[in-house]
Structure formats: C-alpha cells, structure tokens
Length: 293
Ligand SMILES: Nc1ncnc2c1ncn2[C@@H]1O[C@H](COP(=O)(O)OP(=O)(O)O)[C@@H](O)[C@H]1O
Ligand SMILES: [Mg+2]
Image 1 (cartoon, rainbow, N blue to C red):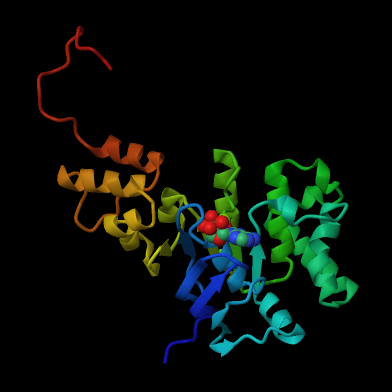
Image 2 (cartoon, helix red, strand yellow; image 1 turned 90 degrees about the vertical axis):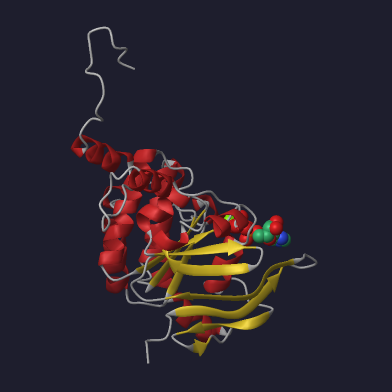
C-alpha cells in the first residue's frame, strides 16, 4: 500500500458563521516530496482551505488526517499537527509581532518548550535558510515588505515542519524578490520539506509546482501541474486562464518548432534561448529598407 498522505482533508465542509458554505465535501491531500500549488480565483476558498489544513479552522463535517489518522483538536493533537504542518499567512504583518527578527523566529520553538541551545540552533538554521541571518537583530517594523515576508517564513521553518503551507507567498514581491523567494523555497524542498502554495498565478504554478489543485465551485481537482494547467474547461470554471507557457507551447508545436518529447519554455528566458536555435523562416532576404520592427 502507498504511504498515507502527510496531511489530508476528507469530505470536509466549512462555512463561516452565518455564511454560505465555502467548501463542501472537499478531498485534498498533501503527499510527501511533491510541491503543490492550490489555485483558484479570489474568494474561492484557498485561504480557508489552508487554515483547515493547518488546524486554525476546524471542518464542520468531514475530517483532517495526519499520516492517515484523524487529528484530535485538543492541545496534544494540535501540537502534533503544528510540528508537522506550518502555515505562513499572506500578510506578514498578521504574523510578526516580536521586537526583533530573531525574537520573532524563536517564538514557535520557545513555545514548544525546547532547551535554549536547541532554540538558538533552530533560529540560526531558519535565518540562514531564508538568507536573513544579517537581519537577526533588526526591529521587525524597520524591515522591507520582502524582508518581513522572509521573516514570517523563517518563523515557520524554525518549527522544522514536514509541510510548509504558504498563502500567496509571492503577492506583493517585485520580480527579483519573487525569483529569490522561489529559489529559497527550492532549497527548502531539497532539504526535505514539502511545500504547498496557494496562488492565483497560473504561470507561477506551472513553473514551480509538481502538482496543481484547482478550486472550482464544484470542488477541487488535483493532478500533475502541466496536465492540470492545460485543461481549459477546468481553468475556466476556476475563473483562471491558461498559463502563458501552455499557450506558447501549443503555438510552437503547431508550427513544428518543438520536438515531440520536449517541454515548452516556462519563462521568457527559456523562450528566448529556444528562439536562438530556430532558423529564420524562408522568404525574401532582408534589404536595407526592410523595416526592422
Ligand atoms: N473570516 C471570515 N468570515 C466570513 N467570511 C469569510 C471569512 N474569511 C473568508 N470569508 C469568505 O469565504 C470565502 C472564501 O474566502 P477565502 O478563503 O479568503 O478565499 P481566497 O483565499 O481564495 O481568496 C469568501 O466568500 C470570503 O468572503
Ligand atoms: Mg486568500
């Protein structure tokens, strides 16, 4: 039998007080070592699902399981859940509260009652993983948005979770900040952490995730990212568009510019590299008065 999902929601339904159902009869699972992007339009329930997965909310019906066993919503059960699954909320200002970066990152491990030396080791490790060791003593209110985001993620990493759940981690970052964060997350994955990310960015999901889960009003559909993100019907129902990379790949194949077994380009840089290998189309030779652009 295959290993049970690290964490899973089974037939889970949830409504906020006095509100309509946000999620109904939902099945969602996180498998060890598979990066997973949870996609859906604004208001589709991504944040709600992530809070259910990390124990901040409790399903009205259905259950949350940890390695195949139902989670108990008591102190012991929730501690076990939180040492396995850590959520980083979208807005770092909802997460950070201590005076300095190191103090903030040490909060979780201190709360577990770990010895000081162990807390220090975890804080150092998390700051290094997020590349913010030089900010350890900096007051959190003096950090840039990107630095606050990294500090919030470091706080979760210091708990040494098996599953790191990130709600829209690239929102609000500039392209360079986004790129650097994805590199950092790649490093965490290589170190054995399973990363789940909520996003409405289909291009990011195609670039980054092994699997994609699409939230539609009918429920959630999960599968390999490249296949899921080429399903026009499903994307449409999720209120999303085809990723740029899928559109380009189709065009290149239709024009015979991509070999059968090759993946399409996933970034403008990969497209530019491919373009350099493509011979110019036959046609009249350029002359001095051919318009250049
Ligand atoms: N604290 C809350 N109280 C009441 N309704 C909420 C709350 N948070 C979210 N909702 C509602 O639940 C639905 C799903 O929201 P959310 O999970 O935040 O979606 P997403 O993260 O995909 O944008 C939306 O209709 C939203 O208005
Ligand atoms: Mg959200």
